[in-house]
Image 1 (cartoon, rainbow, N blue to C red):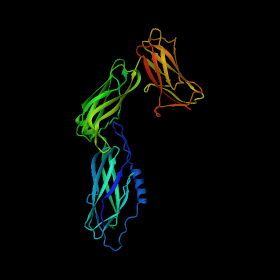
Image 2 (image 1 turned 60 degrees about the horizontal axis):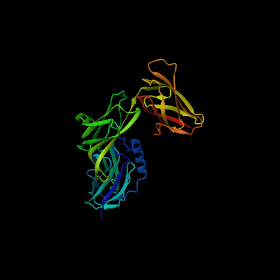
Image 3 (image 1 turned 135 degrees about the horizontal axis):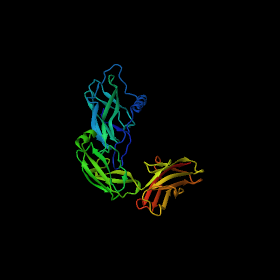
Image 4 (image 1 turned 45 degrees about the vertical axis):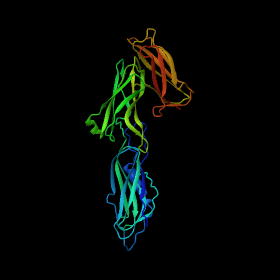
Amino acid sequence: MRIGTVIVALIFGIGATYGTVWMLKSRFPTPAERAQTEVQTKAADPEPPPISPTGPHPKAIVDKPQFDFGVLEVDQKATHKFVVRNEGEAPLKLVKGHTTCKCTLSSLDEGEIAPGKSATVELSWKVPGTTEDFRQVATILTNDPENTKLELVVHGSAMARVMFPQSTHWRVADIVGDKPAHVEGTMFSGILDKFNVVGFEYATPLMKAEAEPLPVEALKDFKGKCGYVIKVSLEAGTPVGTFTYPLVIKTDIPKVTEDLKPDGTLDLLVNISGRRSGPLSIFGKYWNEEYVTFDFGSFEAAKGRKIELNMFVIDAPEAGLNFTSVECDPPELKVELRPDPNFKGKSRRYFLDLEYPPHSPLATRTHDSQNMGRIKVKTNHPGASEIEYRVQMIAY
């Protein structure tokens, strides 16, 4: 009987990266999930080929039932061929079984291997997510009474061509006065022996960056082959408040299609964020200094909410501080600045009143919803001509 090639397709989990690639938690199943899958798999195993009660019998042999693929690249398609021999005295029948994880099998023609002959079992798969250790098992059921189930195992690790161990969100130290701020980030590859950073694209002329080769000891810690430290500086001049600027790192790494065909070179994106302290300082129960956010909390939209905070101003204009323009999101927000005539000191004190009026529309502006509110203020202060604050609230 004709012996065909057995094709088993292993498709691991589903993961994705966007332009830049960073350290992701593995999307492969946990041991508990894998155990549950195996229980379900065993319960649903197809009917194995019948075994002769009297003989003669086949003898299924796989010299190397496990294959270590080493380090694979995320999104790489890979294959490995296992050889199954029949060293028995009767035809060896093969029936496709199940695999671990959320894997699928391509169609498999049931076949027989004549005594003394062999067949190839080819496992093909695509690795979509980073993991330090993957292990997948494909099963082939046989009519060998001493080896009724062949387990073919592939294992190894998978990583993106470029990794950012500290994530792709880099936060600079607070910018105070006219002093520049600095931050460093690390990028490396465990796949490529060598690559170069050939330039940068900036979202603001205030930003500069340079790349320095990653020290050998650091590469060993990351299990990398080549890498860089990216040093970023931001000059004074950013608006008072929080900011986020994208930085594009241009490399000579070939960009490839799903089939690993060249498609230009790879640009990597990181975000540089921080805040600039200005001459205006806010204090109060509803103020989050770290995130430069007014936090209204949760309240009934029908009742609304009004909050009062203290604002201290250094080097205020002679005529006093004024908000020359206020833009709000949600637009129903009201902002009022009132001087404190009784305050004595080098700085000046103001009362900052914020109100979401009663019977305003329902609104959700939270960090978790990625839909923070905003208050953008222009002032007559030369050291804080424009400030943007965040607003968090749930008006239900």
